[in-house]
Image (cartoon, rainbow, N blue to C red; front, side):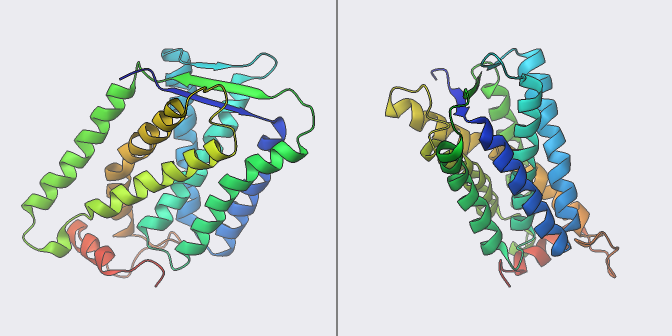
Amino acid sequence: MTEIIARRQFSPLYIWLDIAFLLLFLCLLLWKKKYMTILVGITFGVVYMLVDYGVFHLLLHSRSISEGYSLFWVLLWMSMSYGFTNFAWIWLWMAKDRHLLEWSVLILSWWFCCPLLAQTFGGDASPILIQRTTGSYHGYMAAILFLGYLGVIIHNLLQQEKSHRIPVLWLLTIGVLVQFGWEAGLLMGGIRSAGFTSFGAKLGTLLVNSLLETNLGMPYIYCIFIAYSRRFTEQLHHRETVLTFRERIAENNAQRAGD
């Protein structure tokens, strides 16, 4: 496979607009008492930063940024922004939240609108150009993805009752949709497509990242979700009845998103 370049170019205003959105999203989650969702989002924002700055930059030297801007601070914002938003959204999907449609429209519409707002009102400030190469680690990411779904498949093959099987299609839908929504918003807003001269290069980054980057963690985050929610509620309280791992899978399978 040819080298996949993950590149973004955007106005500094984009950062401040997105920070304002994150605060709004956080306030809405607090209002609806989505406490565990918030903790998950913050936790994975930190994980994103450790991976992006610690592994991609310090270890693999695959990160670069245009002169005049701090790689650390830009990566901290990016990690907390997409780490918090992506995984809070994933947690809401897995919980089949009754307002899942509203949360989804909020996030997707912001990913589409924020680049356009920054382009219109960003003035003449020097744009930030940040990128990373992926050839040195996509194989490791593919291994993580394959092993995760292999574990899910083996688990399902061992189950006699359908209700105890992990919903593979549901996990794939969430994993691909979340990353695709993010990548498509960046592409249509002119952020992800900066510097690419061919449609194939743009499409290649969109497809590979959508299939791989968030999707690789879905089996693991699903197991975390089941392990937590079989004992505790979204409001961090103990459940009246603690379920086994398989019982919680069956309970979750019986739920419908939006109900």
